Structure formats: structure tokens, C-alpha cells
Length: 314
Length: 211
Image: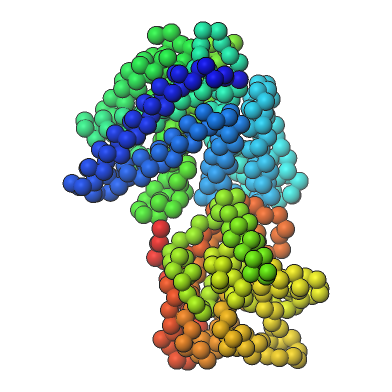
């Protein structure tokens, strides 16, 4: 568990985060005075949710690790609930099986809190991937059962297994010569993933010409992606005091976060498009709230976790 | 005492539970409802959660004088169940029209209205198949025709039939929402037209998206 004397790096990082947030809020507020179009509105709502996220992350990082586990667990639960609610791929009689999926959330986070590495790895991919089909079979309705068997565990992977890696960062053992610890790594990956979204968006707005996959995500351009990638790698380099990496490893981490964040973003975009939530204009506001916030994190956090684990902890 | 119990149950326990754990969202004019003195809430019905959520939308002062209307055959079957629903849900139990003698259901409700109380009515009569609107009974039309001075508050509820459908015991979290319309007086004069008006007011809330 991290101790008090490593607060320095963490405090620096928290100062950076809130500095960026104040800057962003002032910038978008000023932009809104001149041109209050839907894009500026979108930026404003995004900034608002970042404030909330930053507040939760920092309180959790400073107060007690258990608070973080609880907060991430709730985030996973809310995301899973949202995905289960908008999904077209489960049947009405799957209610009780979805209940089992919800029960996996506290178990996975308890395992993460206790730092049991092997159970943490296998609980969802091995155990729940068997348990969910098993209880589905016990209910006895075989019509479309294969679809439910694959969809419900996949929901767990996307919302619970993935995000729980952020929490597990806090359970990693202490390394000599590395003061920031799991909290530093946590702030590093979350901050960079969110910043990568912003960088991609900004570069795309400034230079974007060539679309990557227009049918899924019309705003994603090669210019935005590459600009975001380079900016994220540069930011990662300056934030390496939060990690145990050397100069080269931290560049690799930046590259990995930028790419995996992008993948997460377009996967969730495609899923939402399938559920008809992308084309319905204002109706998106009520739906897709939490998934929209964690889309890039859902993929970048496990990738970053195993990158760090394999390089420094194994 | 009863007022405090209802406040603790709905505003302090049930409300937060429904919001945080079950993911129910309140939309539309739900804040304006708290300013109303006497009203009839009219909503579509999918689940017992509907009653819980509507009760959680009321203010400390409204709770004690607002009664969900329920069927006596369902909740009055056992004495203790009837007592519990009367005390904790503040229900008025009425007999369905085909169920023999006793005071007429509408007379019972009229007595409460005359005393200045408010009602929560599900004109579909029962929860039915989840997420499907059934035909409206005409009782709401009769009540509003007799009491044109009392506004009705239309509420469109969606998603609760997945959380707790008819016949289920297991409550499973899913996103659901209650969309409140503004309190309004009936414009129609005939019972059947009033029923149509109320029904359209509820359906319109579904059509117009209110964040």
C-alpha cells in the first residue's frame, strides 16, 4: 500500500489536472460567448464530466484506497447497467442471468482490493464465461440462447473486467526507487487517455481531412489520430515521474494508450450505432452517458496495465 | 408520525435507492409537481416500481395526502398486506367493478378528493404485459368530469417493466425513466373525451423528448 511520503508526485499531478480543467473551462466558456454551437456545448458537457471524474479520482487517490475500489466498482456497475439497458441482444427472460452479471462486479473488485492476481485474471474470462452460459442453460429456453451466452459475458469484459484494471493498479506491490506507486500509474493512464481524446478531437478539427472509418465515426480523421498520438506521447514523456518507466518505455506507454484508447472509442461508437443511439440526435443525451465517458478507458486500462506489469512487476 | 414515516421511506430511502441502484431518471416537470396543492397523477403502469417512484417524487407535505389507488383483490387478499400497503404506501384499496357489493369505487375516491386529498391513478387498471400500453378504464374520466377544478399530472413511465415485471420477485437494475408533464385542467366535457385527452397527454410525453 502507498504511504504518505509519496504524496509529492501525486500532488504535482493533481495540480496539473486541475490546472488543465480550469484552463479548459475558461476556454470553452469564452468560446461559448462567441459561438455557442452544438460542438461547444459538447465540449462544455465533456468538461463538466471531467470535473466530476477528476474530483472522484483525486479524492479516491488521496483519501483511502478502498474509496477508489468502491468508486471504480460503481462506475463498472453503472456502465454495465447502461449497456444491459440499451442492448438489443438479450432476451426478456435473461433478467435473472443479468442479475448474476451484476453480482460479478463486487466480487471482481473485492479480488482486486485483496490483490489476488490469478483470481483477478480468471474470475471473469474463465469463471463468469462458464457460469453465465450455465445459468442460461438451467433456465431452459434455447431459442436465441447462443446470442445471450456470448453477449452477457462480453458486457462484463467491456465494463467490469476492463475498468477493474484501473483499481488493480492500486494493489500492485511497491517498487524500490518508485515513489508515485499505483496511484501515480492510475493518474497517468486516466489523464493520458482523456487527453488523447481531446488531442485527437482538436487536431482533427484543425487539420482533419482524411476520414478513417466514416461509417462508424465520421469525426475520426488520420490527421486527428496522428496528431493526438504524437501529443499524447509527448505528454507521457513529461509525466514519466508518475511511472517506473525509463525514457523509452514511457514513449511506448504513450503510444499504447493513444492506440488502445482510439480502438475503445470506435468500438463503443460502433456498438451505439448498432443500437440506434447515434442517429437519434438529442436522444443521445439521456442515453450512453457513462459508456461515452469510459469508452477509451475500457480498452486502454487493461492494455496499459499489462504493459506495466510485464515491464516492471514480473 | 405517519408523515415522518412516509418521508423517511420515500424521500430518504426509496428515492436514492431507485436513482442510484436501479438507475431511474426523473425528467420533465417533476419539480413543479411539488408546488401543487391538489392533483391527480395519471401514469401508465408496468411495475410496482412505478408506485414507489411516483411516491418518491412527492414533497414532505404532499406524501401524507396523496394516495395511490390499487385493487382490493390484489392487495386486500390478506389482512396484514392490506394494512401494510395502507400504512407504508398510503394506498386506497378499491374493489374492481365486477367484484360484488360494497361502496362504489368512485364514491370512495370522490370522498378523498372532497377532503382535499390527491390521487395517483393508473388508468390501465393493471400492470399487464411489460412495456405495453393497455386500454384505459373510464374511472379517471368520471373523476375529472366531476372535479374539473382539480388538475391532472400526466406521467410517462418507461423501463420499469424490465426492472420488476408482473409476476417477478427478483428486482434487476435497468435504466428507466419517469417523464412528468405539467399539471393541467381537462378541456373536454364528456367522460370518454377526457379519458382520450389524458391518454394523449401521457403519450405525448413519450413522443417529445424532455432531457
